Image (cartoon, rainbow, N blue to C red; front, side, top):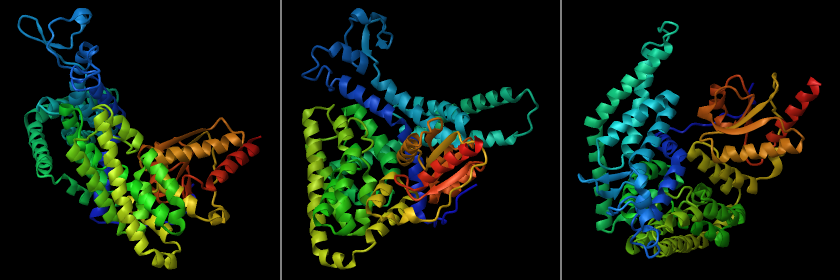
Length: 542
């Protein structure tokens, strides 16, 4: 059973297609960010230029350990590390260099994690296994980290496995299913690995070389700040994932593996432009936008949720010019002074940026901080001028324009989010609480409730926490409340709670569950109705 809710209007066109593509790319990268961070910390601590490396003023005592962990060095004396086998040796057995962790992780671990995640997105565990096997061929067939190869070969391999399985679906004799499944996946994986080694790998090597050359060309001609002309408007329209995760992260990882840091990690993640915009609305804005901007600035700067400033930019589109100028100023600062991050800052909060910037040295951290300050200052000044120039007109027209901008932001993104819900909650009236109840009725005992959103991370996690606390206050502590991506719903949930634009998709994935639509994940009266539904069901069972 599903609660009734107004149907969401779908938007088509190129923008939606790019959004979906960007969501797919980020879906491959984001679940593995922890591995990127782990590699980044190992890199910034133990490579020769790292904190404990031989070339660091702090590394003289730890240089030998750093060579083993980070790789490199030319010592022929192993000492207590004699049992270590991760070394390369000359013909006479002398150690030439420690292999360490940095190289294997960036060459094998990270691309294979991406490939496995991509395969699972397309065809579950079976797709993940075949995608991983196929990507090994791509990796071995090249001499650079194959992130782009993993992001392309992984989904393709999983899709091919899915099509192959369809050929004999329902035609296998009972008792032979495991035999056919294992051998078909193994044989296909072998073939794709060979194809990846001889054909796909060299192609991806060429593509990576072209992209790398393009970035080098922009840097050489001091044109890299112009990328902000694309990136900043793309962020507001939720078109940035395809650029950031599809190009900047793979190329940035390659640069960081060679030099210990990359400026590419800061082009999109710099929190300065968003902070400057929100501070300008705090001082020069009007109405709901002015009142909510200070809280939004804290969430954006320290929490790293950049999307919370998008409605402010959409409510006054000319401020996008200020975002472009601020972003370009930040990129220019890092380009001129050599600032960069050791690994991707995800989310793009000042805390994550600090962790990724401190590894290459205190000087680098100061440069990165300076780039954030300059980006925020430039954006603040330009936005302030824009807002002051239109202040009288904005006061006269103040109404639900900011609420409309929030709705437009969600339409651009194609889904709701906790950040937008928080803004809506801080500016909306209590009218929603007086809305007529549309609580669904459960016909089976409620034991498991899932709060689902598109990605299954931030917004649904916050919603699950809110509902869990409400159930606990009501004395109900034996119901499991979790958050999940809609794509991962498997029909086992008794109740599924989604944002109203996503309920239709959730119903298709879990048709036997009770579906409850909420207008926002942060403060919806529907949570109280769910608690009442559980309470009433238990009274009837007594």
